[in-house]
Image (tube, rainbow, N blue to C red; front, side, top):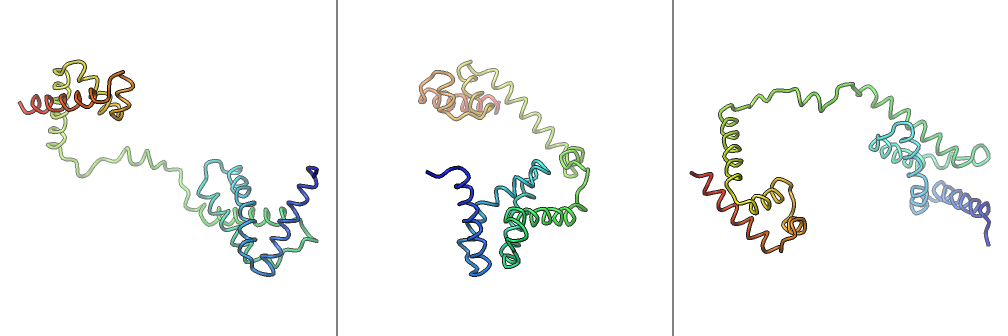
Amino acid sequence: MNTVSETINDSKNALLEDMTQVAVARDTRALERLFDHYAPRIRAFCLSAQPGANLMADDIAQEVMIRIWNKAHLYNPATASLNTWIFTIARNARIDYMRKNGRYQSDIDPEEFWSEMADENADPFREAQQQRDQERVRDGLKQLPNDQQQVLAKVYLEGKSHSEASEELGLPLGTVKSRVRLALNKLSVIIKR
């Protein structure tokens, strides 16, 4: 039975062997195994420095793996462990990324920017018509029987499916569908008056 330290050593040896295969034989399968092991760790390393920067973490992980592919022949196990060598590459890739993309960062919140902009194509007549239509629909809904109002509210205002409305109201699915159809027909007649 392997001890924990033997398992860790076996894992390290397998990673070193994969690194050698990438360096010497340009073995893509070995690179895939290195990717599977290191990419999540590199992402976590990047996200620990900048939580929420998922795209940055993905870009850096990809860049590190490209650098490993291109520089695998430069790795010397006598000077540094594989982890140290790869995370040094990751740190440098992160610094390069920040230098390259940092100048484009801004304190402007895009949500705030768009919410304050006035619509240049605003049509006051269309807005008035839309408001009138909304009032007609609201008034029309009030004229429907309660059971039909309930079903329309579930389906159209709450965005529920017919089966979800059926479950929540404790009604058979066919009843819900019939009430929706009846309510829409009545509402159409009421609104056209």
